[in-house]
Length: 305
Image (cartoon, rainbow, N blue to C red; front, side):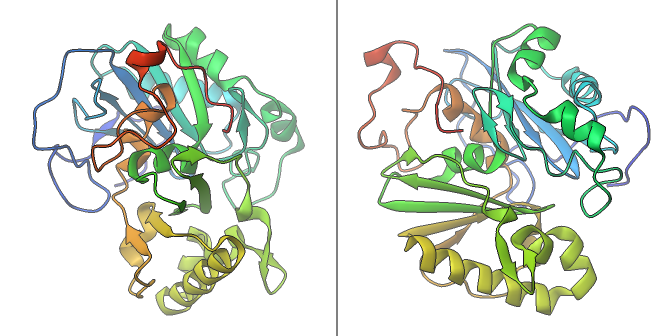
C-alpha cells in the first residue's frame, strides 16, 4: 500500500473471510446484532487499522487502514484516528491497542511515537513529554463520544488467540517486537521485553524490528527471530507461543511444536476481550477462573495493561 501524506483516505484491507495473512479473517457465521458493538483500533508504528466487532468479536466490516505519519504528537494521532474510523458503522464502545506501556488508559511509554521520523530516528524531547502520562482512553472518549479502553497492542492481540491453557506467550513481529504473557487465560502485568538487551549491545526491537529486517536481509533476520524465541522460552518456559504481526509473512523457519503463527487480524478481534475478559476462547470454552459477564454484570477495566 502506498503511503500518502496529510490526511489519507482510509483503505479497505480485504473482504471478511479471506485467509491471506494480514487480511481480515471473519468467521463463516454471519455477524450478530444481539449485543454491544466495539470499535477496535490497532495503533501501529507503520499503520493505523480499525474495524467494528459484533458482540461475539466478529468483524462486521472490512478493516480500514491509513499509514502512520511522523512526527506524531498525541493530538495528531487522535486526528488521524477520527478520520480513520469515520467510514465505519455505529459502535457502542472503543477498544484500542497501543505500541507501548499503557496503564489505566494512560500511556507510560511510546517508543515509536517520540521519534522525529519513526523508529531508529532521533528522539524528540517535546514528544517524550507530550506522550508521558497521556490519557489516551480519555482523549478517545472525548473525540469519539463513546467509552474507551486502551491496552498494549500485543496484550490486546493475545486476547484473540490464547486458549487459557498453561503459560501462553504472544509475540508480534512488526515495527518492533511486541510481547504478552497469559497464565491460565489471565493477562500478566505487561513487560516491555522489546527494550531489554538482546545481542551485540542492542535491544530486541533494534535486532528484530522491521528496520533491522530490511537492513540485514531475510536469512539473518530469521536467525535472530529464532534466537529471540529461544531466549523467551528459556526465560518463561512457555507452554505455547503465538507469533503474530505483519512480518510473520517473512518467516521461513520452524519455530517448533509449541509455536503457532496467527493472523494479523487478531490485533483487531482481540479488542472484544478488553471489554469482556471472560469472552470464550477460540475453542469455545470460557477461560479458566473467569466468570461470564452474565454472572458478574459489566466487568471491571483490566488492570494488567
